[in-house]
Length: 320
Image (cartoon, rainbow, N blue to C red; front, side, top):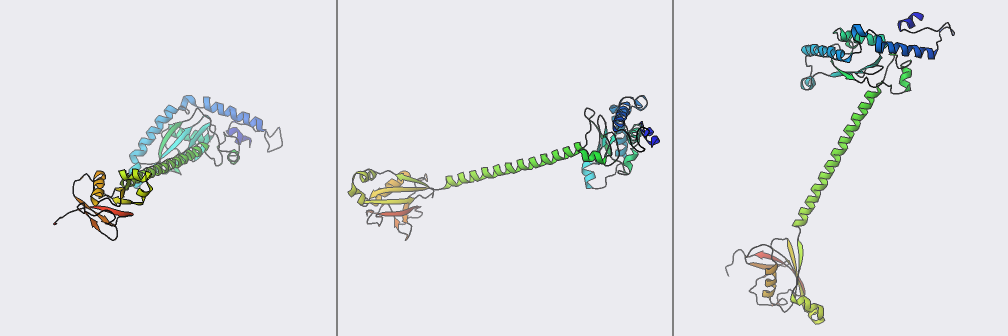
């Protein structure tokens, strides 16, 4: 046990306590000392282990070598190229993709960095990526790597500088959650955008339908004024509802039952909306009866009293 701890620059405290026990505070202190030695003194002159610029250059050479030998295996490889794996360097260690975190004091970290600096693909990764993979160096040395929760640290069997046991990358988890949240937000925005477009389209269709809908015009005739002041005149009133030839306008006309057909046509002439001078005739809805302006009968004699619905139609061929 003493030799095991010596390999990691730690002190076995079995003499101070019962066999197999150690002082946690002393162990943590030794770990911090070992950490400081690695971060600032460990083989710095010989290998430049923590010089990220040199590591970046070495990784670029490894990537060039990998790309020269890369052979696409599927359509995805042809379209997007090979996959990429990130190595994130923190204050207290580095994280390889989603695989594992390594403390700078661990031998595994030393071996991985040594492989890279000597121009070799890390042997640790060969079992996972036998054909190799593109590597991207990410500088996060301004922050300390944090485990996701206490349970992960328990699985890791010790303080954060140990490299044993399965680890979770809290930062990767956060980035993944952020990506999921981003995609969710984009979908919601697209859904809102589609809804707005649908509402806008519906609004335009309603406006168009409204513009096409028949409008009603109440024609003000002199007989309207007479109706207001004379009950006797009201008893002689006939109401004509007339649909124009364009089907867009309905005229409501109040006339006396003694007015001639000619009078009705004169009022229709003033409000016709077809911008045409073509001659027309008026039809009853059912049964269909045709009237022309040359008719000399009054509205009561034409059967248009006390009210009637009429429609306006062009006279195409007049042989009379």
